[in-house]
Image (cartoon, rainbow, N blue to C red):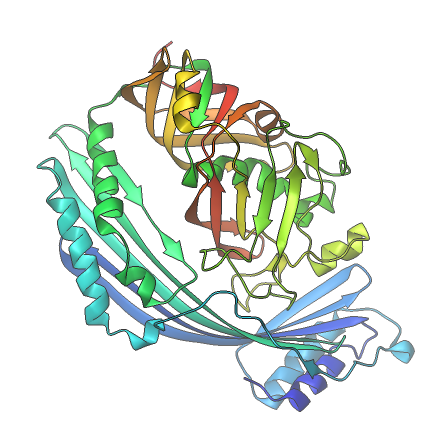
Length: 463
C-alpha cells in the first residue's frame, strides 16, 4: 500500500520533537450500500476511501493526525504536524527499529469478494427478502431492505519495528417490516451480518430472518400496553446481549477503566457478577461480524475472558491505555477509519452458556417479563445506569408465556443487573450490531444464551 522505506521516514519524522513512539495506519476501503424500499431500489452507492493516520506518544501524551495526501511530501507534512504537538527533548529523540513484516493468520475465510458479485445478484436477494415480508400478512404495509458490504485493506507500522497488513471483508443485510391496522403502526427488525463475502448474503435463510422481521411487527401491532414495576425479566439469546454490551462491556474497556471512569476500575480479582456469569470478548470467532485477524494497532486478535464465574479477570486494553494502567495490550484496539485514533473496543462480546434450558427458565418463572428481542438504549459507563427498549416482549405467568406486551423499557444498573442473574441458559447465540464510541462506529457482535435477572425495573403504561 506504501513502500517500507517511505513509512520508516514518516515514523522517524513523527519523533523529531522527542516522542517515544510513532505509528502509521494506512487504510484503503471499498464500500457498497443498497436500499430497497417500497419494492424499489432507492439507494445504490459505492465508493472508495483512502487515507493515512499518524500517531505519536510521549509517555502518556498522544497526538493524532491524518491525511489523504499519500505523496511523500503530504505524509511527511502530517508527521511534522503531529510531532510539533509533542514537547519532548529533541536531543534525546528516539530512533525507530527497522520494520520487519509480520505474517497474518487468516482466521476468517472469504469465498466471494463483494466486488466480485454483480449488483444484480445482490438485488435479487434483496427482492426475495422484500417479497417474503410483504407477502407475510395483509397488515404488513412496508418493507425496507438494506445491504451493506465492504472490503477494508489496512497497513499498520510503528517505531517498534511492527509492519503488518490485513484484509477485512464484511457483509450485512437488515430487514425492516412495518405493520399497520389503519390507526397504529409497529416495526420489526432483523439485521444479520458476518465477516464474510457475498456468500453470506446469498446463503441467508430469508424464510427465517425476513419472516421474523414481519412477525415481530404484526405481533406488536396487537400487543397490550406493558405493565410497570419491578419484575423478574427473562432476556432471550442473540441480540439480548446488547444490554450487557452497553451496561457492562463499555465499562470493561480500558478507555474508561484507565481514567477511573468505570464501575469496574481497580476491581480485578473481585466478585462483580453472579457466579453463573462468565463474560468473554473474542475477536477470533470464525467469520463473526465483530471478528478480526489483527486489531488496529497490529496486535493479534484473541479471546479475552473478562469475568469468570462472577470474578473480574481482565479488561480490554489498547496500547495507550495500557501505558496508563501498567498493563499489556489485549488486542482490543479499534477505530472506524484512518480519521480516528484507536482505543480499546469490543469485538464479539458474550455471556458464556450455562446449563439451564430455555424451557426450564420459563417454567421456573411465576410472574415476570420475557424480552424476546431487545432494542436500543443508553448507558452511563461511569455509573452503569441504563435504559433499554424491548422490541418484542411478553408477560410470563405461572411458568408460561402469555400475551404480548409493548412499550416496555428496562431501567437499571449494569453492575447490579449482572449480579442479579439467577439463571443462564444453554442456547448461546450472537447478534450483529454497530457500536459507537470515541473511536467511531464499529461492527460488533453481542451475544448470550437466555438469562433471567431476578429483578429489573420495567417502565410501561400500567401501574
